[in-house]
Length: 328
Image 1 (tube, rainbow, N blue to C red):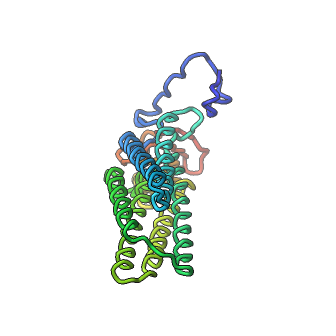
Image 2 (cartoon, rainbow, N blue to C red):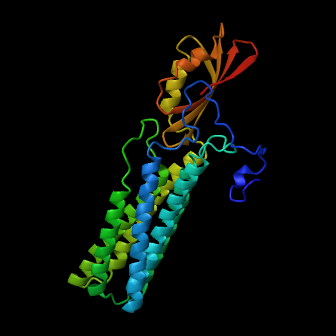
Image 3 (cartoon, rainbow, N blue to C red):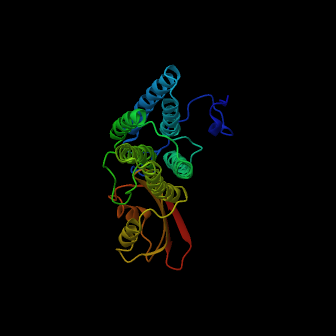
């Protein structure tokens, strides 16, 4: 019976036994799900940081209730936004691991991280707008600031953000053809980094207001923080969107594939290149040659390209009919 918890299995033939693992096409394809090399490590750390944020959230809300502090309550609600972002990233990792190699996912589950990264980038953009709106309102209608209570709280928030940023630091294993790496982790890391930057800017504004009486310093620096967060968000939306829309990830990789395939006098008639997941690329190439060599000849020319995880080659005799052969 098809499980209701697994909608991807709908429509698949039910045989009463577990499906056999897919046979390797040519011995090169080893990773059916196209997950990043640090998937397990990144998933574990996002769950840990989610736990840290959940404990901080609970402490702030309880403290706000016990001490009747609106500032603590507001800080807790702000932490809830971080928790939502981190849970989105954590669940994306868990789903990608669970669905890795699922027969309904033609090219694996590696892009789930890009989808989560894009969603969290949008959340970051909304955060920038909210910060800007609140800052403008404070400029138009100044409010008295409790510096004695706000400054320690801002420092505490900065410390929590810096600890979380350190825990989510990416491992520098990005390939030269995939400089973006794991965009799911990058989105969560960037969200917390932006919060740390805004906290530092806020502390500067609060200290200026307390020491110099510049009541406008806090909202003005809030606008600076909003601009910084917006810049982070736009950059991440572009990177994640490019991966989701199958924008050619690396012109240099495409040129290298073309050069290698044409090294024996063949001609590449068509070439498509896209990302499958962090550190994984797929390519489809149409090659014309005379005489047409076995497809293994052309595949062997690409065998040592790191990150080329799935390959389909169609070989044609010059002026002759196509003969499609599947690669890795």
